[in-house]
Length: 156
Image 1: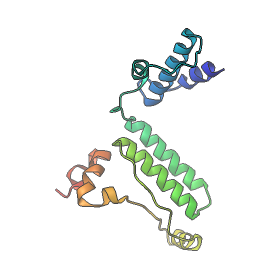
Image 2 (image 1 turned 90 degrees about the vertical axis):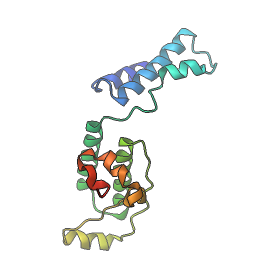
Image 3 (image 1 turned 90 degrees about the horizontal axis):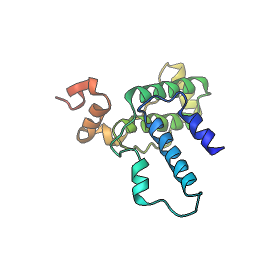
Image 4 (image 1 turned 180 degrees about the vertical axis):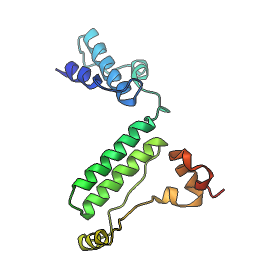
């Protein structure tokens, strides 16, 4: 049953993607379990290292772009609430952080339902820029996320 799920997870996955790497890693663990009769002995460090993707491996930019488009499409379908804004900003900054192996804390939306509705009527929206990239000291991270911006990110 598990094996079918792992093999199914490989269907339609882009070759060389992080998803493929982890699906293959799970399959390797399953295969190793079949070999030793699924004994409850822990895996050796060597076997774990052999199936883990490299730490420096990053998601493909196209995968992140697709995920960000999906987030935006889902946001557009929902009723505007402070919780939705918070969840959306968290998802956006999680995806962007994966581009540079960073994580960003996103606080809850401080606007009320009425304030969000008023902004929407004025054709305005709420955005969020994490402190880690908002200052000159962290601006280079925006440049890493969006190389096309070049020196505009660093003020040069």
